[in-house]
Amino acid sequence: MKAVAVFPSQRRFDVISHPEPTLTSPSQLKIRMLDVGICGTDKEIVAFEYGTPPERSEYLIIGHESLGQVMEVGEKVTRVRKGDLAVLTVRRPCSHPECIACRAGRQDFCYTGDFTERGIKQVHGYMTEQVVEEERYVNTVPDELRDVGVLVEPLTIAEKAMTQLWEVQKRLPWVASGDAHHAVVLGAGPVGLLGAMKLVLEGFDTTVYSKTRAGDHVAGLVTSIGAKFVHAETASVSDLATLVGNIDVVYEAVGASSLAFEVIQHLGTNGVFIFTGVPGRKAPIAVDTDLLMRDAVLKNQMIFGTVNAPPESFAAAIRDLGEFHARWPNAVKSIITHRVPIERVGEPLSGKLGGIKNVVSIGRE
Image 1 (cartoon, one colour):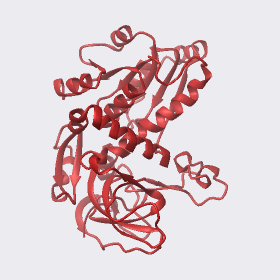
Image 2 (image 1 turned 120 degrees about the vertical axis):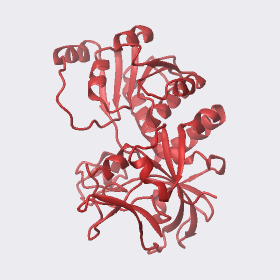
Image 3 (image 1 turned 90 degrees about the vertical axis):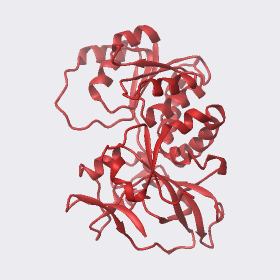
Image 4 (image 1 turned 90 degrees about the horizontal axis):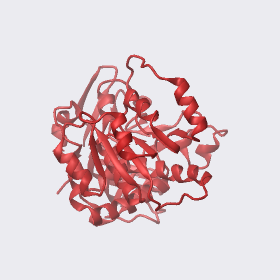
């Protein structure tokens, strides 16, 4: 069967022929892949910045944003049925007995760093025609989300972040979900736009700040969901802060440390700054550490990072994507800019295709 693989030692990637998988456990399922999203992680892997093949394999099949359809189920599978649409989780637990996070099924908080990740680290991913997976890592998706279900995995980033945000803000007895807070989203890529939708759904007065070249298209998408769009090329960070007022939450989804630390200086009283992006290795930037430390103390601020997501975040993402689709169907669909067959995967991976989210359609009817 066809698969997209990276060969780190040869510094190349290609569409290859890979053996068709078979069930080896009664708790496994075989899934026909339909759509696989391409994100910055995939582009960095094919640029050989990281990505580790499985043991005794010279290549790694990439892809971790999945949507598939169940073809076959093992005899001990009880929750998922043949024909179901499904999204698969990404991270698998480490084997260390002392890692209480992984032993609790929360490998997203793994202490050892010895977890594996499908399509990223030591386990083949989903950019292939068929995969086999354990039932516990499979999440069913309603049929009405067939065209947008591939967005579930990137939405889990916002879902996990929001869960942590509300836990943090329990420190403020008067704050509850649904109150009108001011949120700023940095970046108008898929993670940023889905995060903005989640913030709007949670009752935040939401502003997206981006220098995206998509211009009017992205601005129109943002305003169509009830958020505001501020273009970074025409408004400074100080201008942004003046427009927003007291910034209660910043949801960073751009991976640019210089912008992030400039915005942190305008985080409001009792505010929370959420990092989701991982910046590339660039030259050091100047940071006013005294100001940041002073504000963190005197304004009761909180800064945290979030990565990967637990099963409950996938369940929440499926539920909320359905809500997004019901409220803003055109906006949700327009996040997916291009769909390409697996034979043309080099175009989006090399950056030749612009847009918001590019998807490889593998089993699309």
